[in-house]
Image 1: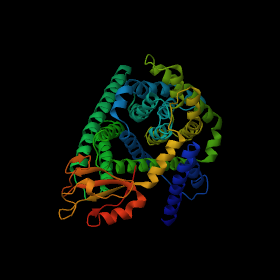
Image 2: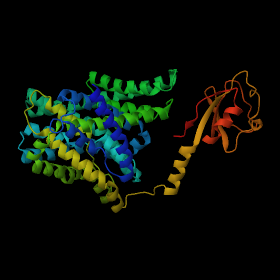
Image 3: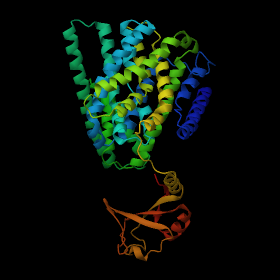
Image 4: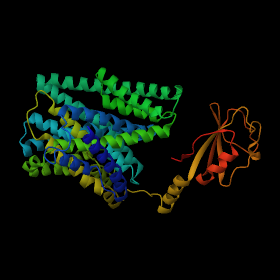
Length: 491
């Protein structure tokens, strides 16, 4: 146990350090965690734990729930309304087109049976939400492009999972008559998407109400509350035969677009969870990979990865966005920005647990596609956007430096006015604040008051005071008889 915890702590420390370094260098740092997993796994130093396929799949499902929920929390509804048509087309028709092309390639290159080839093709046709959010979120791209790609990555996972489950069902029970199989596919798809949307919307609304109405003793419990509703949305949707992942994303969008108490803490909590789970998924992939096995399919694996990047994704983008007003440059960029990540890994692990699964190098093939996408596309996305003239004006370095200074030195100090305080009845102009200090809001009950010089303080008022952190001692002396909260850094 001690060895496992030591290894886990070192992996997480490496993740924090490499994420910081990668943001500065523009390098997709998650790629290194596959290598760590391979070194620790059975094909390397044999220091890592043995992770059965079933356990790896369960970890993957939990990771996707947390990754999708974090992405949904950051997605404004007005952005979805403006791009829902192309995003939905890419998430449905695009996945089918890409999956069909890659299925043929997997059959031809890896000599897989059609069933296994189709499962592999579908698995690597879905883009990854965390990869897209983390890489595109740092780029000053045209807003419409970022919105399309982020909404697509958050909604195409349910389509890929639906196709995977459909193929597994057909392999176990047979297709039967073609029209009957087509009718079953359409009705099942409609049920999964409808129940996923309904369950996600309802639970997201209830989650926001719980956040607003339940007065918890500590602010640290609000992120836990949101986590509970993330897991609840998935489980309820699946129990109702709906798409659990669509429900998670929908619930997060609904919650993120409503008022949330302790919003900043909730967002940072889920951002950290998303990063952690993505690291874990890449390490798990590495633990399942043997370098010796990779060598046996090196050429077909590289060719399949090239087909995914240069053939399947571009055709899927061009065909599924016909007549939607995108320029040639925008279509080229969307073709290149279809990053793969944890989703193909989880889909293949799901397929490998099917009773009809026959041994095939599916996980090894996924390794080549995911690595090529993360490394090649991740390193060149910004360069391609600049070449295609798709970048918008970004904040100057001087402005970014000002933001950094503000985050380091500016703090908000909350002060509560007690009923017995000398401040009750006093006007704001009568309070001698330190230099460079401003009371920018008074929270009185459920009202927020912008104070003026003539504003009189009342018992129970909560003052939000913005100041330089070097003035904290003077503020404590000034409000020595009041209840003063800890100075918190600006988000």
